[in-house]
Image (cartoon, rainbow, N blue to C red; front, side, top):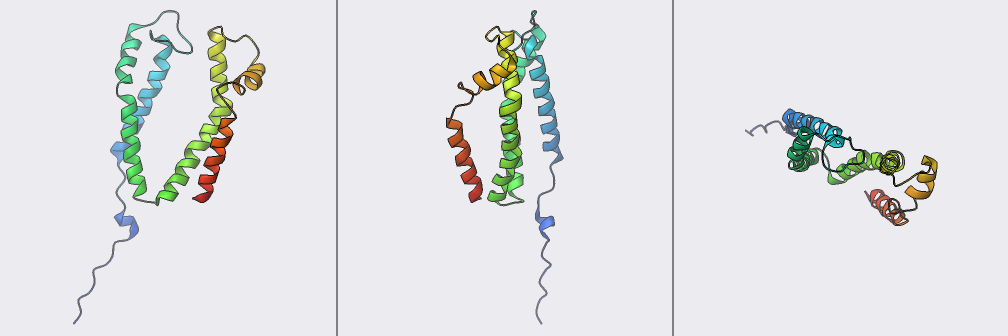
Length: 163
């Protein structure tokens, strides 16, 4: 008489359960960083756009948050990576991260960062031309975007094609 083999758990049962505490930690961290950046114009420390009268409460709150918010994001990222790698291969993980991070990065590089940099320079009196002059002749011809980036993007595309 042979012993019956126990039923094998399905792949769904072997995956770790969703950690809602990590989700809420991420939500609170994002809310904190939103409030942090919203309060930066009212602090004593220099920022792209400054209020004429700095506020001590905003300054103290920002100093408090500065010491722990980035380490918290790294811990959350490490935990998310750990649980994500339990569900997929490292190649799938890298491909997913590339799509979710590089596409917004490239969008920001061409559409969001130039506007931010333009208004920062205009507000501080370092640029007096139009936005189109800045975008085509200043933003892409200076340190912000050098021809070296072409090699970086070419290397990234080669790495992604190997995955």
